[in-house]
Image (cartoon, rainbow, N blue to C red; front, top):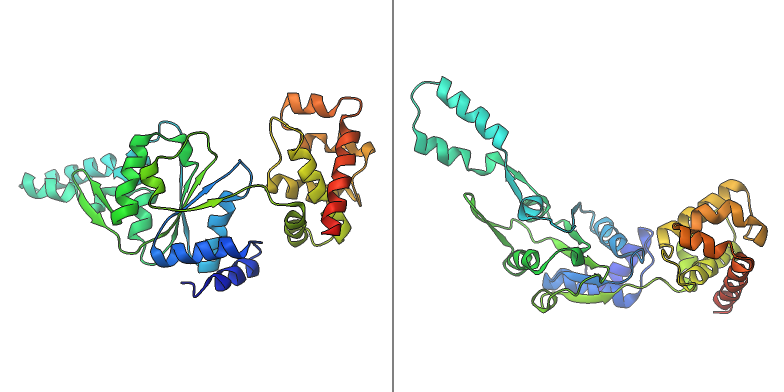
Amino acid sequence: MFSSGKDVLSRLTAGGYISELVTATTIYLASRLHKPILLEGPPGSGKTEIAYAVAKAMDAEVERLQCFEGINEEKAIGKFDEALQRLAVETFCRSGSVEWETVKKHLYSDAFFAAGPLLRAILSPRPCVLLIDELDKVGQAFEAMLLEVLSEWRLSIPKLGVVKAHTIPFVVLTSNEERRIGDALRRRTLYLRSDHPSPQREAVILRLRTPGHNEDFHREMAGLAKALRGWSLEKSPSISEMLDLAQAIELLGYEGITSEMRDTLLPLVAKTEADRSKLLLRDGWASLIYDAHQYSTEASEA
């Protein structure tokens, strides 16, 4: 899969993802040790993107399990297709004599089971990336179900039996830290902290995604990102939102960000009424632009 941390770093960079050697080395070790990576950090800091970047570097598919409050095993593992089972029963009945034990055994086979992301990942003919996103939104009972998969690479499914993995996926767990992930699951993972990038790194990311501008523009945008995240907004901008903002400025034909652009850009940077009101204060936007300029200067000097 990967030969070293430097190999991972090279492949991630070739795929357009800017990483650090420590992160790349952790990905390499996780792939060799068959250990999941637990990524914790604020929303919008690029946790999910890492999984897709690793999949691109591996030339693999992503099986994504999006967690939410109230999710059950059926959503994660799958369930029997009852409509297909009823159709099969009707077909058997029309065929004449029926041996119900044989029919029952047939109905509860994998041919009638609609697999969910977890089952698809371990049954994949070649290793894939299993992304279990926003794990902090589920409870400890769901975590306990995951332990069997991540420890023994198998699933116990009622009426179907124990399904063992054909391949071992590369697993990425993400958490926005709304709830503390249990220690039993943490023990089985390698841990990475995912924070918003520094202005220097964000400038590089922006340069890759919006190559039509010069380096001063990318540093200015990176400075604005840090300024916005330091303003205690209800909804701080994610990396992807800053990319959207850079592309919008490009479409509008602007070369930089000024105080006069407030009303035009406000819908792109303020995503709640409280944030909008804060930036509409007399010195709000002007102060933000001043802070952004200071941060962009620091990035330039670095």
